[in-house]
Amino acid sequence: MAWLVPMNAAERRRAELLAAGRLRPAAAPDVLLRWQPLLARPDGASLRDAPVEMREAEGR
Image 1 (cartoon, rainbow, N blue to C red):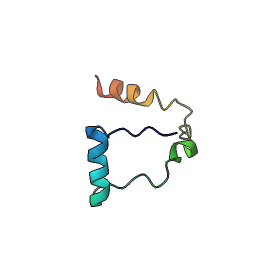
Image 2: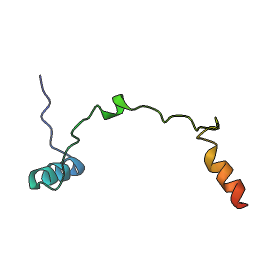
Image 3: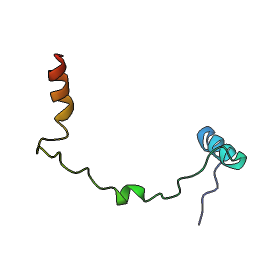
């Protein structure tokens, strides 16, 4: 069974862009499944804390 419903405005615009070749769908939709976290900094500090340290060093 399938529901046949009209596209909303956003879906219609996406379909138009695809048909015109102005939009390309993702080549690898599973790219997020292959994501790996960044390696730790050599000094052992947290990457999350790096911007805070940089702001403190600038005197903000």
